[in-house]
Amino acid sequence: MKRKTRSVVVSMRLSAETWTRLKRIAHRHGWTPSDASARLVEEGLRRSEFAFIDFRDSAAGRQAYVLGSTLAVWEMALLVRGYKSDVAAVAKHLRWPEAKVQAAVHYAEAFPEEIEGALSENTAADFEALKRMLPQATEFVAKS
Image (cartoon, rainbow, N blue to C red; front, side):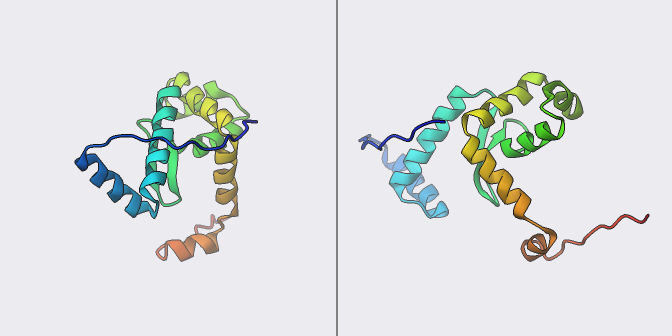
């Protein structure tokens, strides 16, 4: 498990245009510009350290996604668990190269609290909660 270290203050020079864009994204997420810059730096570092990983806004907040797909890393973790950690079987199911699936596995291993938190939120969401978020949702019940 990774130990959290105390934070450090970093000063940087930004163009006026970049500062305006940073303030805009901070405002959109309800962050301070300082929080936004720290998060974006962290995401950039993670992108450079993990192949096939990107970050996007979603209904659940900012999340790690598998590059070029609609799957969040936590969704890939759920799929990999469903296939009993058989990366090759998941890759075959998705018609992806194994390396892309393995990249999500590596990311999930490096940030287990993030992934487990998302998996827990997913498990806690039942149909009643879904209906509140998506009023048009209807429950499908298969006939026996």
